[in-house]
Length: 385
Image (cartoon, rainbow, N blue to C red; front, side):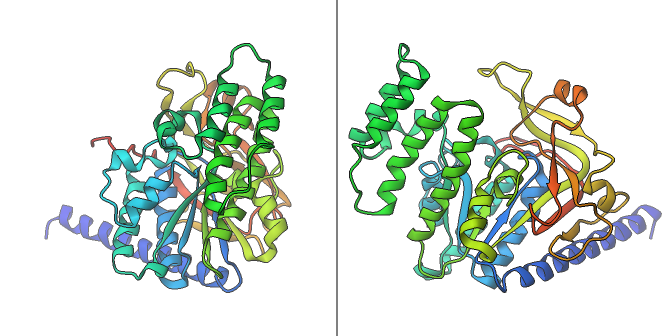
């Protein structure tokens, strides 16, 4: 056997052992969580890290197959996610239609692979045991370009769109008209119909508000919609929530988050898992580019000296799981994690290195943190290698 083949076998052996070790860590963690929790929030410190989607997908598969978590709730609009749900329930829809109006973080090869797995899983299940997908976010104006003709209850929605598009009214006048228009809404026959209309209302209202008030409003409505979705699902259903770390956090330094409101309402039934990495590259919108241009770019980032990834992940090749519900003498009460979201700016990061980090309360923000040694960029679903 030549040296190249020998080294290749050693690498393969190491890779297989690392994968087995990783799977075992995840299974042990999820076995413990599933004993008392019906809702598990899966975060991420950037929306453009390929490994986050891969590890979270493995977690989803374990939760579905072993612990009956059959309701998947995504940080995306309720209306936009209907095509995804139809696809995994057997509809013949191509990938372009699956991702129609869906925000870019989820239009990746990794996420499409998870949807295909869900579809295959559902094919062998009776109706009540199938996975269902819901969107809990306010939606986007981008999506409305595609879905306007399909939106139900146009008698409610079209007047809202007219207010939003008006070029003469001030912001405060528009907000006042939105609120008056909402009072004309009648009681709907079911929660699904209410979600249809209120998602349209929340989207237009939020985009009109803008700034910090809009972000606060969005978090409140993320939680409100999630609780509404819980009412749609069968009794005793279990849920997986897939969103950014900020949204699933029980205590964010920025504002009261969706996770904060869920924790207040659901208590110990809600467990959250944050994701971070030591260093690497990721995909994000470039804040330095004009809004109407192709803003997507690849960025690279290291880690702060006093970040959890520096303490826990340096020089390691496997993921690290930190259980914050148990005493952690090696961790301070507060530490930093990457906090990038959908957009990034190298200029801002150079000027203020802590801008794209969040200061985390050790035992108040998250129950677990999964830290990866390295981040690589997510891959757009239509991108060719």
